[in-house]
Image (tube, rainbow, N blue to C red; front, side, top):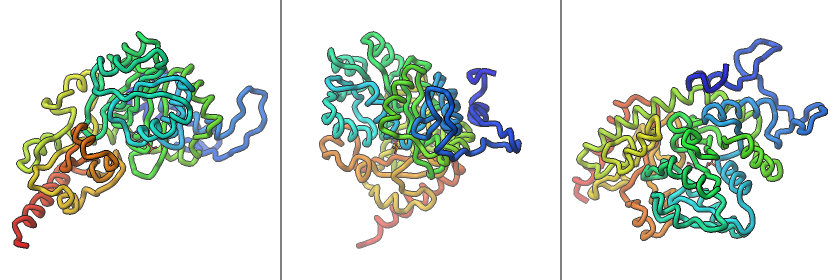
Length: 390
Ligand SMILES: *Cc1c(COP(=O)(O)O)cnc(C)c1O
């Protein structure tokens, strides 16, 4: 049976798995070997060549999930991003980068590209004209991320793919926030799809990994850079990631459902000034999100009214923990001003719409009612503190 004929939970559970011919075990055996018998083939098996049995098994699953021909697994999301960019860009080339991307990707471009003589421009906004006006004669790549952190703004994938194709550019997306369950950019003609597998794919806050899915031709180009730079992932972690991904769709669908309910509940709360969730009809990009996403993710942001101190509120939460990372089965929260966007100037943050009272909420799989009571008790406790005389 062809993988594309299978439903998502079946792909997650089975595609790519290695049959245990020796003992008939139910899961893929783990091959930790870094040395394999010399075979009379062009490419020998070796972990840094991304072609050990477990690496190849997981690549099949990722490729099937993203409706792509092939995939590669990396040691981190940043390894996936850096290898991809260095595969399609060289000295004298230019890349158009979407405004507001993941901080690590931003730093990689700003700090490393000048060393290689690669030029870049960030767009002013998310519309076609914002991207088109930055394209130059030496532009080779358009790089986007959608939904983007932390305001969950959406870039139109069909528009990006059309624009890239009309100019002969390679389109690259960081699809981490959506996960392959909620968004398959290849269906809209996007060329290269990147994931920080540390997030939804891993999903249990215990794995750091990255993935890239694309056509065989594009993957071969990235592989050629990969074998030189060496960003592959240990087979043990690959094997753990395969296990995690069996429940990827189950987890993400539960997170989508919880986040949508919480977004609606927060939107009505008197102490919440604004909610940013692409699944809410009042989100500015709701229509585009509905067109290109199958679910609206477990990620949302909300702004507290100015009388509530964001820090005190977060400290008062009991079940929902403050954490830098996201997309685990457990709900976590962070203040972008204090963490991911701390290095930006207050003016730049204001320009991007990131206020001091903004909180990014990664919704887990806990019971919705328990998450609501935790938030409610935190609001009550903060309100009490404010009433107490100093
Ligand atoms: C975390 C993250 C990355 C980087 O992934 P690492 O696995 O930490 O290297 C890239 N993009 C997005 C959107 C992320 O959230």
